[in-house]
Image 1 (cartoon, rainbow, N blue to C red):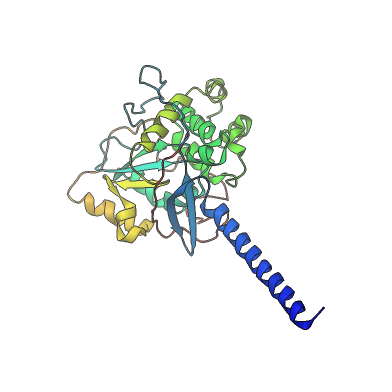
Image 2 (tube, rainbow, N blue to C red; image 1 turned 30 degrees about the vertical axis):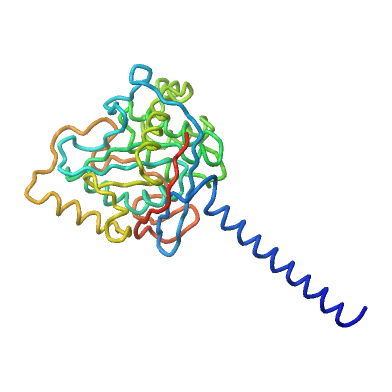
Length: 311
């Protein structure tokens, strides 16, 4: 073989190897950023960026007449779970998916200040549960976990169980929350939650239609991804360049509440009294800054892209 031919073949091999490396890099980026559509959310977590996608697959919707509603949950076109004093002067609206790692990172980083503000009557929460990851990756973990959380609402333990679920969130590709026995096992971390009524509610999927309706509301909302977090109607993704910190959130709430009395009405079912919240565990205890694959505490949030969530 001539030197020229040898060099030509070597060059071809090198080009082929470079192309393969490029394809591998593209595939890695695809696994991280592309599930089945366009980018829907970028959540800045310390030095890391988490990206999710969403695609539409009809999940159907339910009318109020067909939809079983958890205790004290709001109905209508945007069903939600309230947490905190109903007359608190500020409202934090959160759209979340229990399988979404970005949601877990948000909850881990912002949970201590949110609990502080809720327990002091400065803030009430409205949680809207969605099933984006089920639609993107397949499975039923988002749906089953959301239903179980709504069953916990009936027992007055929504917030406690909500925090336990995020503290024990499996890696996104592992649909462990689809296992109802696992959800019941996690419920054992919340004192007094596991009862025959709760167990039946989880196993029967009592609030599946409520969750699907909430997911439909998100699909029609114009919001771009989870978590979507609004303070008094203002999307935090549009505040401070989308990088609000827990300290920023606290300041925004206190500034908005100047001259207003904190809420004093009885907390709705699902809001733990100060000091009564169940410990969610080491992986996501308030203030720990832990996340499934990142050690840094969330420092802010930023959203971008567009897509329609699925159920």
